[in-house]
Length: 270
Image: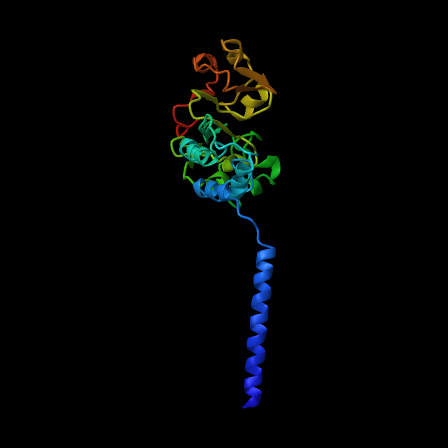
């Protein structure tokens, strides 16, 4: 009986000592919590998409609390989240420009040629390891295998007639699809941008026409007829600067291959 009592006393005493030591260690090594960081994190949408340039919402909350990022840095949260965070930080929210994804390819099944039939996993990256970087004759065009769909948390992307298309009304602006596309043909543009270039080919016009009837031929007509000098043509490809574009629509009218289209809704094939 005495042995049992002694064992109980030893165990109990050890527990008390460990409890005291843990309490002392907890006080000594306690990590101070930044209340603003906690409040900012609670205001963020929690997508953890990385569209802000930081490692998830936790990273962005820490950066905002330290003054290393602006209250309007979250592309998914938009103006409401920016206002909430600005209120927490006691600063101005700043202008929030909603951005959406556009697919820079109009080479659907009718317009773009395949040079062979691809048989394999529905994965753009894996298909890119095949000859010519995929079955499509244009090595810059959409492979249509849906990697972008897999990472889109908003259900904004679908495959229509062999190419990806984006519904701008559903797009959350996170940019995950742009980061995922192995051919880099998804661009984030302002929601209000009136027209977009639906091509990503850097080939010369004569080579473009061999594989796609809807590709940019680098003819310069769009740039020459742009009154605000918002369009440049580099590496045989037109690009619109959203900061300079006045939405006049001249480029849409002048493009001979009609690859500059009105951005009324990207769910229409670009």
